[in-house]
Image 1: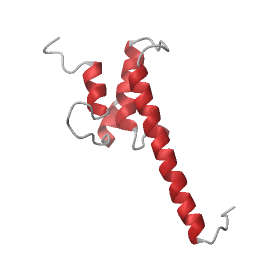
Image 2 (image 1 turned 45 degrees about the vertical axis):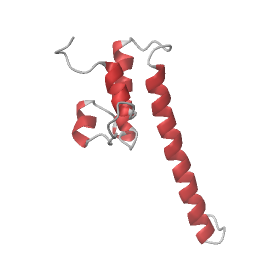
Image 3 (image 1 turned 60 degrees about the vertical axis):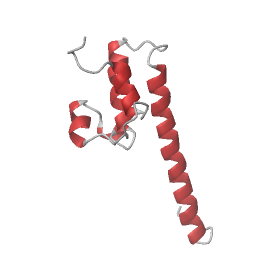
Length: 100
């Protein structure tokens, strides 16, 4: 496997920044090549690509790809908290008035 390219574990470590290199968001081409639906092409897509590849290779067994899934879900949660904080700032700037 030395010439076969990086393993799933190596790709996952690279995606979550554990290999020492900075993690960058996935490019549009990488998301297109991985056939990600448009709804999932966000700032966490760089974690979803190796997760989906792992899921496919492991036949979607729920006890496999746990580390990849955890890192993706953590990224999604962090993005959610950023949106909530931003919405709270907007609401505070309006004097507490809601938009709906």
